[in-house]
Length: 54
Image (cartoon, rainbow, N blue to C red; front, side, top):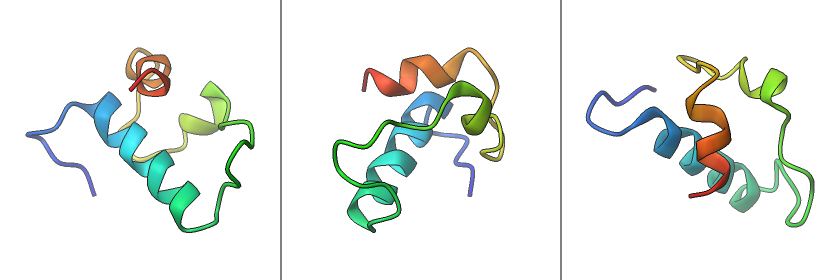
């Protein structure tokens, strides 16, 4: 799942976008908390808030 060529915050943002497109997250629904994002494979605290701004 992880792509070493793409920054982790971009990968998280892409995953959130895919979850919206797939209906896992409803459009306009609150994004997962930083604690929930910690469960994403390879996630660390610093890139998570950055992912929201992509």
